[in-house]
Image 1 (cartoon, rainbow, N blue to C red):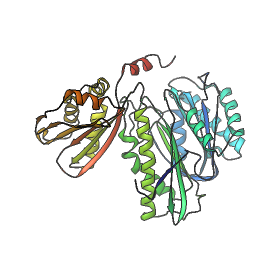
Image 2 (spheres, one colour; image 1 turned 30 degrees about the vertical axis):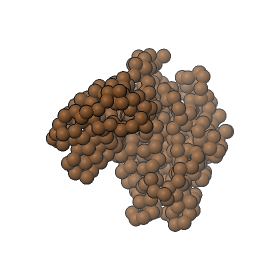
Image 3 (tube, rainbow, N blue to C red; image 1 turned 120 degrees about the vertical axis):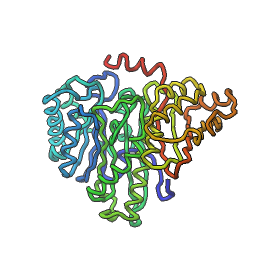
Image 4 (cartoon, rainbow, N blue to C red; image 1 turned 90 degrees about the horizontal axis):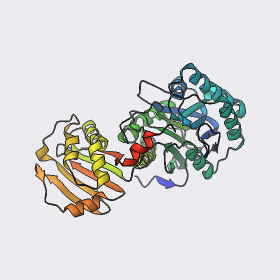
Length: 411
């Protein structure tokens, strides 16, 4: 990360002009907040990416239509507990009802309100609880950092901890802030999207460049994580830019755009790592860093193949240096390479160890390897010795608790 970018406290309310709120609408959960609202005081340029799953939730269809239309956006309303997916016309009608209800409370247009849902697929949302929740949210909006955190917690499902970050940087000598929040713990295997993530900035930027930046950054951040190989029906990544920083508008690619791109990359990678590390039942953030690949796409493919392997994930959970599982995952990735030219290392705060090279296992201590693999974050370093491209992917180990959580998720 460039020294021009500073991490600061906060999330979606860190940037100027943004407020948030959370409430317990009892959509499904009875013991926690489950609805959130994020609002800008001014109209925002908006960009987004969405699930590649053919089965798309109603909020995804609603949001994608608004984003592609290119209009201004001012609010995002979200709920947890019920996904509003596989709900037919009734689900779409509920998205419109939510947007109209928020618009009425905030005196804005329904077409400037985005919706998002996460939770159980196939259940209908209760309209009366949604309306009551929106009333509570609209009356309790705040620009405090605590309000942003509360909104993030309200969209959690099986997440065990909140995920938010904010950074600041300067455009034309004027401070600009970019903040964000995300939720995601299971059904995570994004493709041009993430689970739910909302980003806010007081930067002024053209819609075209904002969308271009988001699509570029998502490739090496959210698209490089996996918990369980399942791409959700609800994956949504949205960014709102209201221009209230007063910094010069970015209308062309150049140094200012490049700095924003780096800041966006910092925020998205941080949120992506947090999602991977908080995978359902996970005890370890498992990272694979591939270097020396011949192409960028091959580097991405190799790294993601390793962190997606169920056998490798189980190996990490058991702290067992069965390194053949990593080589196996590299081998079936679809990338052609010579195994005799690959070097594999495992690394953590417990140390670094050379496991494989020159076509065979290196001499290493099983006890030392097990110690390294027992760390809360384990990194597999793979040097392909084929070129200069590299990529990093993030996943987690596979524990007994993953099955327990998903065996009775609906109850």
